[in-house]
Image (tube, rainbow, N blue to C red):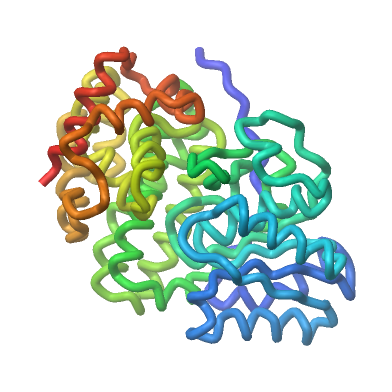
Length: 383
């Protein structure tokens, strides 16, 4: 009989249009007239989502500052800027609105705003986190599941992709409003959806998997498999968008409890070599290595196949995953991405970096030093 601990899950509110509840939710959590910092993806401005959020907050009697000075994935420099603004306006709460960049920035900025220390202070758990400002997370993409995790991933000043972890970083509340994802373009829908799917698959097949987390992971796999194509094909399909948002959230619960594995190790290593979008890099990393990993966990991958609606067999999971990736029409080859494809040894070196070691250790198939180069070659050979 397996022993396990299932970590606490933040309050989750799911409903089309529930963004309108942000002011009431904030009052419920922290009282009336709270000063907040809204960390929002600047791409949401054109859809009016940022203005609408600020209006809801101000109409409810809350004071709100806005930080939207970032692009790409979270960086220590932008985290510092967000934390400085939170201190300047004396924010008592930080709201993250957007994809993983906005949410992870909000979470670690909530710690830095209290301590005044840079984000690097907390990377790889080098120092204990302070009692952070409370965070409310409002995802607008179905990908990272950051709204329910106690991890914040960011790039430090040396260009390495690192992470901070601690229960202090877990949001108090996740507002899941499918309407906010209706404007996400097909390519981003595909990449973020694959990221969520890989989260769920890795969490229920790695060394740390457990029966309780499997419930969330397998449901996430079912939701994403059945709805990713629909969401890509018709962005206005609110049912598909809602299913993807729930799938991403459930996958987030999975990785919160069990972590990730080889595909995320590779995607983090790739990010240290070239500015690849995380979701696409993670999906391609699993595309290249899923068969190799599945050989060591046929039972777990058979259950993945069943969750995908396939015959309960590990080989069926491998083929179904590859078909799904191909059906999204994302670019498979890494040619022209700024990588030296004739130097897989450089990728193998990054895979072995200390900040990426936990993901190797969690992988169900033991990975020797010699395996790193052959796995890197697999990724670089994708066409």
